[in-house]
Image (cartoon, rainbow, N blue to C red):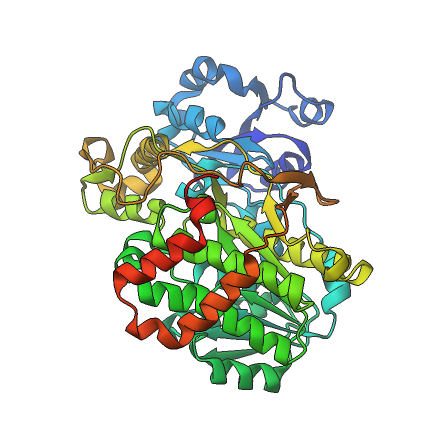
Length: 501
């Protein structure tokens, strides 16, 4: 039996439980524990006995060459790790010779119930490179408000929708209604949830519904039949270039569908409506950004005038989602290049897919609790929430780290010589920004009882009602609008936002 020599980097309870699990494996020899803080904890000192070295991550370049080729695996057990940690790790040629694995965060581990720390280990992925930190959840609070209730998710087959479905399926709900216009994506979601059900007993009933959120009569009949307590509205067109060139469909799907869904929810007595938005809605410079900002204002109007617990959850870029930069880079590397980068100085805020789902559910829990404490008429400001974000990351840095990751022996067989892949700079596309904002300059940020979340207090918008009425008129006149006329209407409605006033 060949003995594998492992190095474990981490701290806290995650490191302790994984180290203890590794020690039980007859074919694994744990040769070093590596601490990332200024000094090792007492627990680490206690663990590092019987020929296990205790080493500092900051001096990795000194001790890793000494351990050399004897190390086969490096495992990471960290709840908090900044982007810079992974950059330093992947800068070492000695690290790239090893099999790199990582222990999932609690948001992922919740889906891996019943597996030991060793069984939970997975390969270090491109999505890890933005850094990681635990997102505080409000599980008990959400369970309190949704116990034995039904929930509807639009865009359920998409990246965010399917992650939400996975998390919701672990709550004691009566039923989850998954709505998607994509047959294949809905099928893939059903297969994922079937697999999840093997490890999680007593999952709620899940109804898979093929349909388009733009179809008002269809959605109204569905809401009347199912009567969900809450709606998570994730369905949207998100690709900037495509929406830019298909502005009518973008407005129909992203904005007008949101309005009709809000109206149908109101008609059916559904109080709780959670709308997934984007940082592209801040000072929008693209049609997609404008459609999302208009939708934000429609949600605010529903809260102010319709008495609904209508809430916006504003995301940054979700790394690994369909059409995002990481899947594109991975595909380009696996095809041998070239890698296409808009500009080496472009920066973006990023969040992971599990974090996006946890954020949405945590906001829902807080918003429902707040709603029952004070109805929207008395609480008009608490309608917009955002994750407490880390610093933005340069896209160029992510690309370089991804290239290093593909040099790692666990991926090299698939991609060939990643270091030789050419890079092409293509320039910013229409409407793209060098840097993005998460909120408007006039916004007041306030921490919530959940340390991971902010409430963004934007003044009550006097124009929200006029935007509602304009969108109502567009529902019947859209097909007769010229492209220039439609863009002019949108720009007039969002004049202050577009011009940073």
